[in-house]
Amino acid sequence: MGKVEKISIALTDELLATVKEAVASGDYASNSEVLREALREWRDRQREKQAIAKVRALVAEADASGYRPFPGVEDIKERGRARLRKDNSN
Image 1 (spheres, helix red, strand yellow):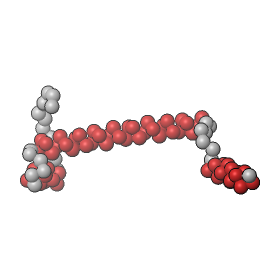
Image 2 (image 1 turned 180 degrees about the vertical axis):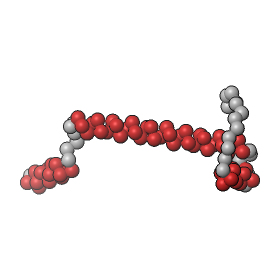
Image 3 (image 1 turned 90 degrees about the vertical axis):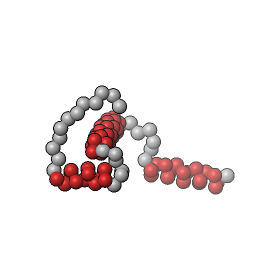
Image 4 (image 1 turned 120 degrees about the horizontal axis):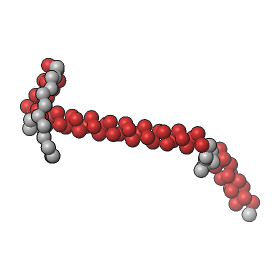
């Protein structure tokens, strides 16, 4: 787990009740375990948000460049139709 430092936090009655219920239900062994899990999930969501933002920025950059590795859907359909016409004429 690494170095552990104790801190003191203030929770609303509602949040404290939620923590205590999680422990009482047996889902968690201690109040600390509930809070550690909540912080891990928060950290993971933050990382996911950052990754999504990075991908969005890359997509925006690619869109702005004008590069299109694939033609539009209509172009693909027309190529398919042309191929069918060619195959049917043989």
